[in-house]
Length: 385
Image (tube, rainbow, N blue to C red; front, side, top):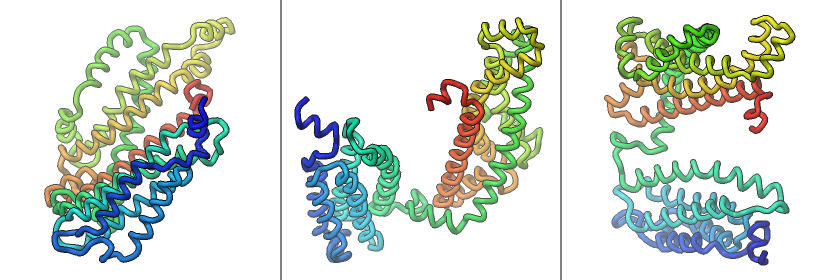
């Protein structure tokens, strides 16, 4: 192994400059002397010494080349892009070449730094802090890069808020409309999703136990359950709205159906696909059917049920939002808020509602994974995780 390769693997003594990042910083320097808008001031005139300080720090980090300094280059260069955005945002008119050169130059330097940190191979002798930094930095920085690109493009092209809002507009709408969004979230996720989820899980598991206990039901019900589970919920939503009314009950019924069939199918698989040797051992000890269920079949079904719940959690949230679109009722719920706001052209509120829905969805999915890990720690998949 050559000395240069060894330095890359260890990741501690590599001081080669990050030349692509240097090229991006040169582009940003050129943009600093160009106009932010047509006939407008340049970045240095508008913001003073701050862009110069950030640029000098970024250049020093790019020429150093070590993993620690390259990691620091990513946020510093991203801050430089934010300064370019800040200088152009309050001006009238779309961005000129000075803005775009400065913005894209800093963004390029940040992305190159992130790529180098991610692709550097750290050997076993590398410090633990560097391994943690390599694991955490891309996860923390990539969302910031995406949001900054979103804001920079919308601001630079002066896209109207009625077509595509800025990130800042979305967060403003989130703060000002938080009480309304919180009430909508309660209707959507507590009354509709969680209630329907609980009913679908309970009835689906009981039905799965009944089907697994009867060969007749396995042959007759399982094909029907598979076929009915494939029916698109979009077609059932209006029917359920007519049957249960236009309030939250019909949306909860949608979640019950979406949850019920995956739970039934996976429960049957988990209850029937048991280890034959373990089953024979319990029979040899004259275990009753209830003892066999409690000691073997029920624990064996849990990983299957949790797989069904993770799938149903995603489908339920999507389905209930669609159901609130298709079953117009009281103006409550995130789906109704998205629909009504879109009709009014308030797309900042639309994206704010989508953001709240996404965050709560991730929390629901993460809660299911946490409960799965706590209740199935004996399973090989949980031990591996």
